[in-house]
Image (cartoon, rainbow, N blue to C red):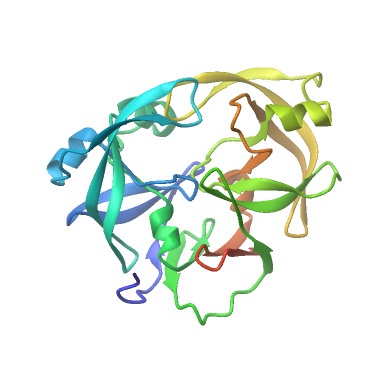
Length: 266
């Protein structure tokens, strides 16, 4: 729940990765912000410091090539942006590989959709601020409906002038737009000129084809000559858009009301 509506908090942006100050069981840290993380994820060493107890062993799958061992720990308390979420079920795992490979640093925590599910957030990536808002606030910009796909929220986007498809709204994606392999095949992208580059998150590194899209249209704004990587996981969404494009908007999210507002930055 929102304990208090705090003033705008500094949002740290390194490259296209977002960080916020957070407390886990009262232990302060800098956490990665990831709207497409179905649960908050804690590094095993940090979880020990924060007193997260033993939990149920599970297999975690992310955007990487394989799987990772984790445990689900109940009753974790998350505090960030004046929002208090007292009963989070967090995934605890070794984040050393992800931290070094994607972030170039030790990673304590990834704050997932529990924070977004707790209320309305205003996020200005290029402005470097993030803030909890009252439900009565009147956001500016284009209102887009959210629909859930495999635990993640999606927004409508158009690729190369085609009809709208659902794209994962992924503030944890600091790399290129992702196109699911099945959708890429329908668009004829698999035969397009490409390069191979390394990507992938939890589950390890993966090599992907990277192509150039003629256009991507989001909330009335058209982006030209957009790099896109082909995601080969069978459960991949048609499209996944991350910080590289979303930073061009002022964003208000309202996951409980299944909406997001995108206002183009001038």
